[in-house]
Image (tube, rainbow, N blue to C red):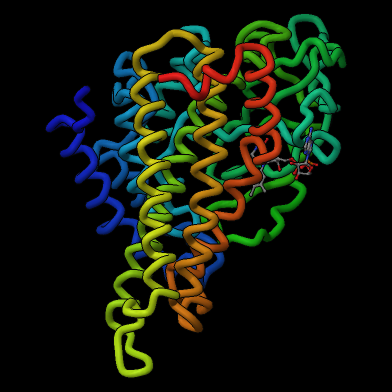
Length: 388
Ligand SMILES: Cc1cc2nc3c(=O)[nH]c(=O)nc-3n(C[C@H](O)[C@H](O)[C@H](O)COP(=O)(O)OP(=O)(O)OC[C@H]3O[C@@H](n4cnc5c(N)ncnc54)[C@H](O)[C@@H]3O)c2cc1C
């Protein structure tokens, strides 16, 4: 059983770490002070992503992506996750569901997205539809060769930086026909309502938008009518695994900062790491990260070697649940070790503490992951998780 990373993977990991250290970390305080990434940085940083070879890391070479394996994407995202305030999101991840696009749609959306010339965002959630997307009220009514979309979408991440939205709507208002549509942002009837503030500072926004009779030609439907969930499921597998990776990158940075501080900081005549009250939490943090990382890498490797999408979905939920909860515990302990300094906004651990909270909520809450996992156990037995 050889679990070592090969030379290519190690150099990719190092490149991602260098990109994070040299390009992302120097922007952290400005983003925090400005409440987001000032627009003057948007184009130059996109060019940096391309120059460093991280454009379209989640797509195949034939679609102008990098052709990286899932494990390689995990290695990159883990390093990016060390950056605060969502700076990792400068590395644009063109929607996975575009893999299922027609050739014409790929040329219009996927290929330019992989090159950094276009950017998409994803709109499923609504005021009445969060964990339960069957409650979606956005409808797509057939009108000749077109669809007319009406509804309201919330929490649309990076809407400000995007130029198209993938909208999840019910064809003919039928919840059994969830369907995805590619909607250009300048389409008449697509309105930006507001972009509320959230607990974390985020480089772009999380917008609320309204669709009022937005006309979309059939050629902009992604997949078939009723395929919405199926295509979104593939997105979730990727997103959940990459959340796991970013969480562990963030947790590792928090642990490193806490350990450095505990080694230097003296109270009662000695470095505080000499006190078990400080060193034991550090030991627990290291062990929890180690265990979660073993799981993350194993599942990523497994996904590169399987076509079993159901199994992939089941395991991605476990990774997302565990890594986000481990990271939450780690950053809480790290902040405690840093004392008052850990509570200052200029301290990365304070920002990581706020940043990591959403990882137990978005892309399916921890409770929904447990629902998926327990449902899978009921159907397929515990060995799906406990077997090797
Ligand atoms: C910062 C941010 C960015 C986001 N970005 C996007 C985006 O880009 N696109 C998008 O479409 N959405 C996005 N979301 C929405 C996100 O996916 C939802 O917030 C999430 O799915 C939960 O839905 P909800 O907030 O409506 O909570 P609800 O579904 O109302 O849940 C409230 C509570 O009830 C619990 N609960 C619900 N059902 C069950 C159940 N069956 N069993 C046990 N507990 C349950 C939940 O776990 C939660 O604790 C974003 C959210 C945030 C906060």
